Image (cartoon, rainbow, N blue to C red):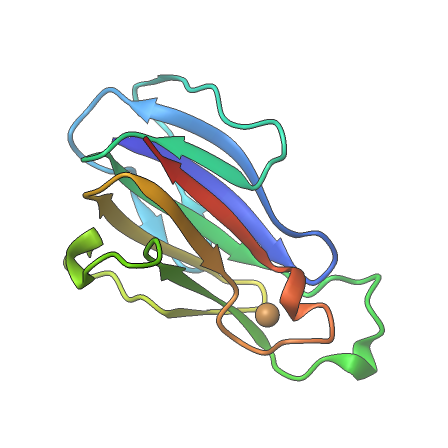
Length: 152
Ligand SMILES: [Cu+2]
């Protein structure tokens, strides 16, 4: 089980941090206002990619995403087209619909209101490059808000 957190905002898009392998079967407590609680959680460092937006994984890996939606203060506020960001996932081109599975309780695509946390657990069943992106047309910088999950 791979654990990771990220923020998503217009400037710079997704930024991943706190990536780890969880050495337990259960997930940390989570709520949309406060995010996750790592008290007592056992994990080990996981070497993520250096660009802060690519995740390396293997077929069969289960990844839990914790993402906070930020309203970037440096962005011209008049350009905002929504009060939220989102999270969507695409399978590699040519893959069938079973390329990934979303765990029960998770929603993809999901909405991430500014200031709130979102979480979803996804199992990646096949090798290939999956793309995750902001699913809400939030600002003129929306098109930059994406990253890859490289499964091999
Ligand atoms: Cu967006």
